[in-house]
Length: 433
Image (cartoon, rainbow, N blue to C red; front, top):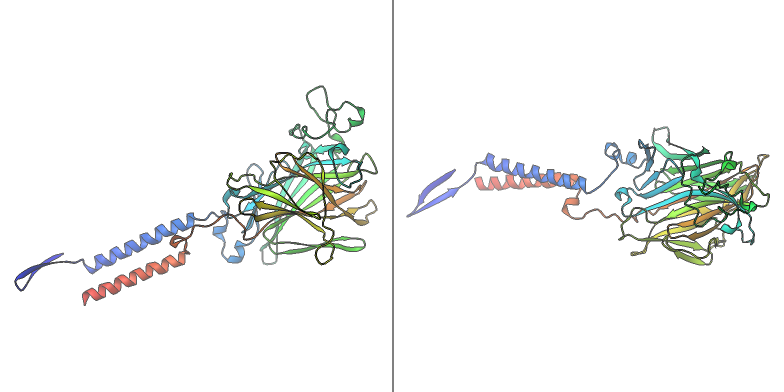
């Protein structure tokens, strides 16, 4: 509305809006502000589909698992996401806030089991000492997952278990040929490695058909304190951190030993950058008794089977049973995660008695990954149980949420909108006066 009036000898024009129009515009602007801000805030974070349905803060911390149509299993906590391949004991893990692990994703595959004679007496495995071997993708694997709940119905633990089955008809039969010795040697001493028919690289691992093998993974909601115990009592203590660490129980039984003096090695195939761009480059730091040893997958080591030297004691003179490899971001020197294992395993003999035995390790890099071999004593007729784990460092995620006004909680936007309305109302009241 426009009013023209005369004041003295001058004419003036006064433009004003109706109170309802002014208030409506203020309300409209406030609603638009809240709507846009809410959309920006939601898009600034990527959560799992289930998190938005939780009714309490405690529920959001519960570990969860689900399976895709192709059999891939996912385990997720607020901090850690793990993806498991249904065809082979394979684990990829990254920060939940880092969508798809595009900044930091690590991988541990259990790829091979080997029988060897420790010819040089160093207690660890070198390829030249091989008696027999079998790649684990030569077998069928059953992957089962589930959750354990407490009396209140809350998930306290999520588990995923790989169990070995019979021989597979679909497996990669040439990935090891570049470094595993004897696979095409015609000498009869090597025929037990793998039988080759003509030149088609058709290997026979049927002698491992009755071997039992399981990789049983756990993620706990709260910290878990465990022990390694044999018939004499507790031999080691360890702690698994809740929500950020996946503990694996490696169980092997009925191994077809060819010698009563041989040992068994299990290949851990580690990669430090699975999905990250070139801007995020990680490397391994092996924490050994003689000091830290740095490697990355792109290296090709000349010596195959270098001994990982265990820490015998910590700074307080107490036996140190936990060995560790750090996964470190090269540019920032920030440790994102670990691969850890106990240097003690439990052997169960045929008569049911249990004995704690030492676990040693050897390693090398082949240009694609770090090949780490766990070494177990001969358990002919019995079984062995060993516990490694994969851990992320809480608070070390490379993902940084956007900062500024639009990163405020939704409640803050409601307050801002209310303040705008109050100010507009006050201004209107002043104008009326």
